[in-house]
Length: 305
Image (cartoon, rainbow, N blue to C red; front, side, top):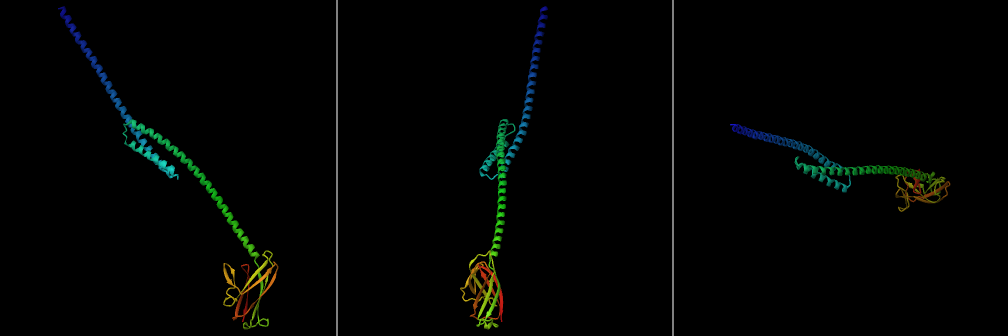
């Protein structure tokens, strides 16, 4: 009987031991399952957060790439250097290509996003180099433009001064030339008959005497002078012995009636010339014009009835 009780107790102990071990195993399995589940949930949450972070970073990178491409366009507008423009265009196309690659990458592709992030850093550095270079060129161009404007202003001022001096010189030369001109005054015209007396009627006029005075002029050039006298009839036709009798006046040749050579000394000098009448003279008002050195130096008038 004692043996039966012992055997029964041993059996109960054995069952309890197995049950206890099973419970422990279940608890361990439950702990492991809970840990695995927690880890899986944690990793999933972590992956979700990383994906969201990469998505935000990807968007920011796209904005930067787009901005840099636009800045390359703006830089090309600021310069006139064709070689530098080609380099900027090449960098812009590279930036646009990287931007397109970035747009095709999924937010979960961390490795590709990191690669393009490094490329973005390089693009940023290259762009900064060009910005500094172009800014330096623009400052230099501004300085050169300023210097060029200063040179232009000085040239304009010098040109204006030269023009003013030229005008003053021209005016002075004109005054000197005017002062140096001979001047014929006291012009007296006397129509004469065949006896050398003053003719009372135009039909009796055989000779016309013209007397005038060349005034004293210390600024005038001395030496041989040629005087030309033109006698204009009432109809303004000039009395002349030949159509070949002309002289230069104001860029053209005009006819003369009488030519007279004199030796001018700078002192006052009286000159008398004569016109021998060989043609019909109408009655009316006549005019006399006296020229020397290409200038008209005196004029007068007379009437014949």
